[in-house]
Image (cartoon, rainbow, N blue to C red):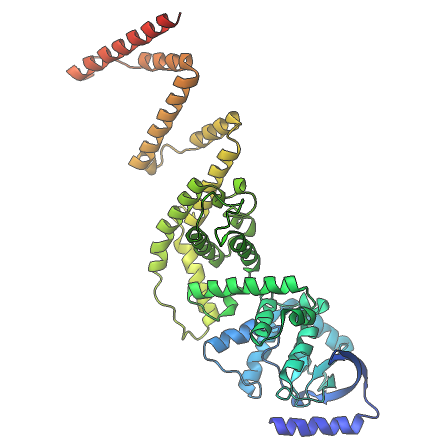
Length: 467
């Protein structure tokens, strides 16, 4: 059914029933609450709105792939219905049960050419139930083409009202604010339409900019489905970027940081967001007071940054080009992101992303407990005792070098703070040397013994001078 036919048939119903409508409904139209007639319009006369706020991220993602959606076509009508069904299966089930039991309780809103402004999901479920062939709705005396901004204002007011917002994908509100901003709607008006403050709208736009930067970085431009389940991390990252960019000397970052350091922070965070890193763990990177995160200490940050790029760059370089012509791009990209995460894991099923967080979180804690040596020493002993010395990697040069470094550091600590303890330890070590007939004796052993005697004599002399 084309647009002209829909207008004629809907107009016939309105003219026929305007004196005895199904009921009345107050509608906020042109800044006034207007009582409007409610009519029973056959479902076959209605057209879904593909830019409905509930599925905006999905339809925008499809359009970015060159997929034009025409809701007048049966194929695209079925596509929109699928998107509506998938948008909130739990709530759809509840609404369908209610429709089957008591019928349509909430009145919809359509234009005079049959485009659904409010009630797309309800109309879809009514069609699915098969128990009603009509939709109870207000009919605006305007088409979408005639006054698109007024229609969008009405749509936003109803779709983004507090009662409805809970049923929406978290990303949709950012897209709605961005779309209105691009159309030149003032932030004050957007805030009024969406039932938010101006400050909240400006935050939405800032966070949406961060989201778009992420999609551009990953090569997912305009594919908003890849923002799913990542909202909290974007909110957190955007806060960091607002605090740190501009080299204003934020007290929450290490001294002397540059914008280039913030660029690195952004890129690294994007890699963690890609694998949907848990929010609490994600905040270890740069959240809160400078003593509580990696970006608050230059040495820790540079170590964390270098570890990340060293391990992640080869993985990303090996990914290959994105297959944008995939039959199901959303599923393909989700799998691509999952494969990226799997490649970050080692033979022990440990991700280098996780190991990097844990390693540097321990360094932050070490600084935090610098004045509680007993706690740090006990933690070091516990870590050493946990080592499986039978594991093949224990004898690698890297591990041996670290053990030697630990020995050198503890020896230096004892020599400076408890020389008597160190001498006792040396005596025990000398006593433990087993000289038997099987040992290979050469000149070097005698030289080492003479060196020990010489050092012992010098220590004794120094002690006597102190008496």
